[in-house]
Length: 558
Image 1 (cartoon, rainbow, N blue to C red):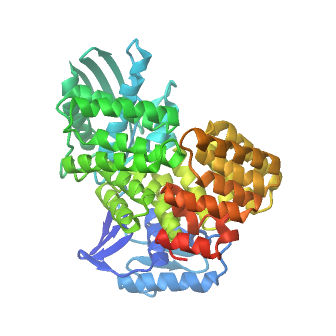
Image 2 (cartoon, rainbow, N blue to C red):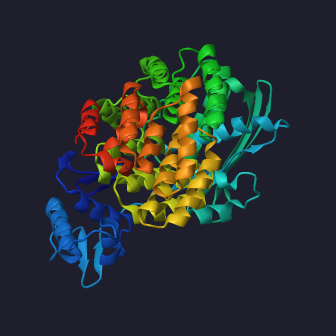
Image 3 (cartoon, rainbow, N blue to C red):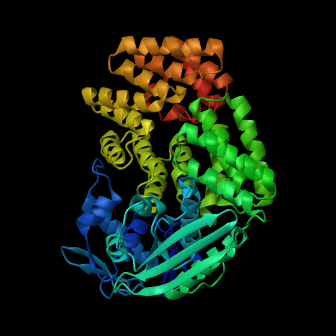
């Protein structure tokens, strides 16, 4: 999002201040002050509120002096004066006020489409249409669109559009229904004004599936017109010519969002079918590559097999569409798993520049930032992901993980409890909350959380490794030794990653076998070895020569 005032532009996603199109140097804290003030133009933003936004509770700094300096530097960048302010007014003993009016962007919520088809399996189709509308509308400058994770909590409920709109803080709500029979589709959409409940626009479409994209374009253009948003440039989408390939893609995308291993496997089959039906359609390649990335990460497939398959799919997809944010985000994940740090950084930045309102790259980028010790950057992007998708399982987990890696354990505990309240079915959220609780000495609760995570994990090796480490550090050595025995036995029958075994030995305090298994994990190219410099489990061996050699081979700073 870009906001303009006077001769200045503020790129909130890129965190840049420009004057007549040229970048103006501005430190991060000063930029955060500017962003906070612009969020509430004409209103007083208290010094206490700014302090909480700029510094965490465990930061030791002279807040008054530091805040005064941040505001002073911001005024210098704007050429502003405290005595005769053009932009930022000081309210003595209270705070500051941004005195330039900023036009409020209209906002719309796209509700889940009602399935009027007899077959309940068509839910994927209705949800996919609503998701695609949200995604395309989010790319229209000047329009705010409520995140899909927020609106989909209303799915299956009978809701009054005005009430929902007021709850979500939007000007309009788009309701829709879909009835499908073979290749025929009937779509009804209705844009309701929240203020008075009047219909701003309504349309009924009765056509072939092949007309889906023209219907989507008409809906987006009509919403923009009804909300007085200038659609300066039509968003260009590379779309398939084979509508059956698109339907298979929607099925895969619907399952991939659930992020459970079984759903990811089923999604892979749909993405493969979409590619078979139309090899020139780029988007399914990202979904198929995600299957291999996730399988390598969870320990379901050997990295030497899975990651080259992902590489091949992404190369083909990007050759078809070099401007796909999903493909670049998935490439960033692959490069992290291959320990190719600079290329991963480039891929994530490319994805974010292509679609700043897409939560996926903001959610995935913090892993790289954390591994490289760029903790503030990791927390910034994790927070942005939550802002874009507040109720998504992985965005909330990523804030917890970024805080844990940065050793902000109390904040990690707070974020972890909130994440579980919002998305209670993620085993890794429980594991990272358990590790954070253990770090602050709350051992009984940590053990409870660890066991809940184990039940949800379904014996996947990555989760087993976290549980084994926790069992060891929390004094449950019988459980830890039983687990490590099981993990070692698995390797005699089939592939099972070495890293979870190393973590369990670290939890037990047995550093020699832990280092042996770490070296095996290095030889097997385990994706999560990238966490070597930030995962607290390694603290006991961090200064040992064998570990330092391992970090050197990963090209990580020791």
